[in-house]
Length: 165
Image 1 (cartoon, one colour):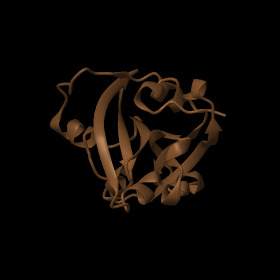
Image 2: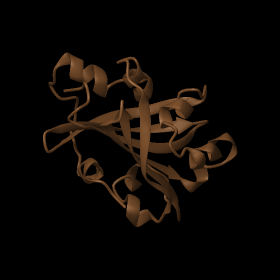
Image 3: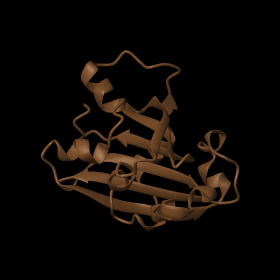
């Protein structure tokens, strides 16, 4: 199962450097904190529509492979993050199987819980980079995060209803 927004997310083309955008847009795109929390600060009830969650082979995550360790399986989670029921963000998380040890095994049980609720309660969270991308007039970003030093990729596409626009 897929969703049209996730097709756009997978098609994101990334800028070589931070583009000249409105300061408010850059504030959203370069946010280091939880996007879930940021959406809630807009006075919205944040929910997750789960599109896909489970182990996949490397060919299903080809775009992320150059940025992650080579492994036989990856945990893939694709969602829509909704504010008061309206999709504001499409999200794709790719986790190497070797990351899923210890407390990070919880990443397999996220279900309809926003990823930010888990990630940003960990004192062991770091971010290697944020890249800004674009596709079909929409903006997105991807980051390699590390939990206790173990990597995962998070890609987010801001949908037309989001306050980024």
